[in-house]
Length: 283
Image: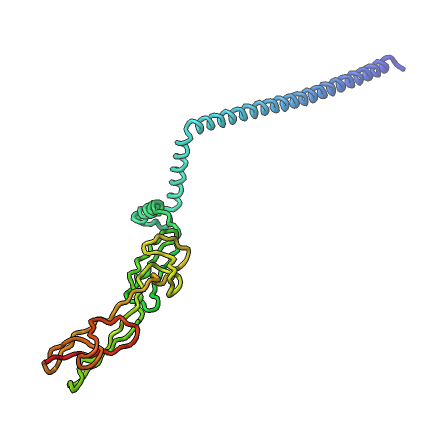
């Protein structure tokens, strides 16, 4: 082999080796640059994450501080805040209802007046029961009994006075005005009576056991019917004789138990048996 040719071959080999070395070097630099870029990206991400966490912490602190300030303001001015909130709610309601039909101002004024009147109205108590006391006559009662009394439940009733009397017929007296030819004779009769004086009231008719006295105060738990009650003692009310007139102008001389002004002359009859009396006429 010639020397010139050999030198060329060696030169070619050296050039190839250098080229390989240059290529390897370039590839190492590219790899290093890529790795550095990746590291830079990772560091940037880490820094951004830290920055985000710090900003979040700052935001949360700001929110907590704002909430504390709101709580303090609410505690200090609770009443004013309530008033303001009421005003705001009232404004909102007014704004909402502005599009709809609004009642007249007179009606708006009437509503609170009605509510105030209802609030001032006294509480109505339940109505109390009402009871009656009815007064009635016993047998042979003369006179009028009192009117019915109406008493509210829980109240005291004062009984009325028994001012009636009890009279039963004791005897009958028959009188003859004219006789012995007297024109148009007119007979009549009068009674004598057995009389009991009043003594209050009883639940039983014709009783001498008076359970209630006149003017007594009693309490009721129901309606009550009372009958006039009388004393047991009797009195006699006699028949008082009348004074007749004679159609022939004769003078009346009294009443006798016999005709022609005979037998006994009487001015009153208190007997229990029927009797006939005759008018005595004097010339």
